[in-house]
Amino acid sequence: MTPAARLAAAIDVLDDVIAGTPAERALTHWARTHRFAGSGDRAALRDHVYDVLRARRSLAALGGGDTGRALVLGLLRRDGPDPLTVFGSGGHAPQALTPEETEVAHPPTNEAAMADLPDWLWPLWQRALGDRAMELAQLQLQRAPVFLRVNLSRISRAAAQASLLAEAVTTQPHPFADTALQVTDNPRRVAASAAYLDGQVEVQDAASQIAVARLPVDPGQRILDYCAGGGGKALALADRLGGPVWAHDIDPRRMADIAPRAARAGATIKTLATAEVAKAAPFDLVLCDAPCSGSGTWRRTPDAKWRLTPERLSDLNTMQADILATAATLTRPGGLLAYATCSVLLEENEAIVASFLSGHAGWSRVDRLLLSPTADHDGFQMSVLRRS
Image (cartoon, rainbow, N blue to C red):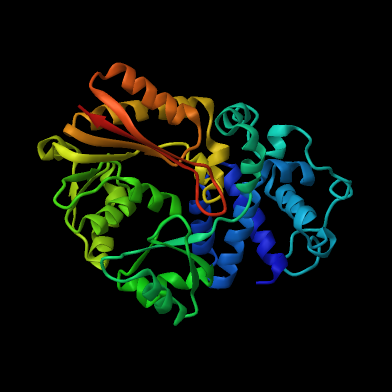
């Protein structure tokens, strides 16, 4: 596909996303219906779509509308090349610009639009991040780096680096996590590398690795990852613990990847259905990485930023409070309960923990981790609570 044809495909996918289809599903559907497209075409298309979605509001101002076509026009006006060399360039390129589309457009001056956030969300973002609110919002417009977690029970970080380098995947050690490597070149080769296939490394953001390293873990402890999803943190805990870790998710389908990932890493993860969790309790440590807005990871999932509404946030808050209260019943006396989200919003973090502590005697907070999204990691927050 030509560069112009890739942009035309991006317009089609973006129109699908604007109509309500999640971005990953829209990209998968496009790939299945365009079998001729090579891996390079699919990668370029994905980059175009996500570049637009990260900055959807400001690009809409530059492009004169919120259609896929207008957003791609805004992207070209921001990053180049000249739209006139793309639109109407023949072949499978987008149709030529209309006279109205060639009119001069200006970047937004509204603060929320400059931050590429909905108006209702901008005050919440400011309240959470203070003087750095605009800086950190605009950081979310950049592509996210790829981080790997090294299974230190199987290989050293330096040896993992050497193994990856032998397959042209270059990395550098992360400054804040002993298990983390940042991929600096050829991230798309990681999944086919020997280090990955042999279970020596896993893809995991540095913020999650920092959080797992912060948890007090001793050999022989019984640990439950209560909202396990794909099991990334359960696997990291198992590597630290050198023993089994239990995992649960309200939707068992989300845990489908845990078994093959655990087998590859040589870890023991015992998955629990909802009806089995209480019978397996109590645990020394329960980790709740609760469902949330994902506001600390929006550079990775930018369409989630535009799907979030005040009503959805309220529903998430109710769910988060319920999860924390339930997880507390699974923690032994003297045990620890870690409540975490990949959100930076106070409504999903401090407010939930404060409400829990005010309504549950015998619990106290013993640690708190606050990570704003930076070039070195995603946004992440965690409170560690102790049961007396």
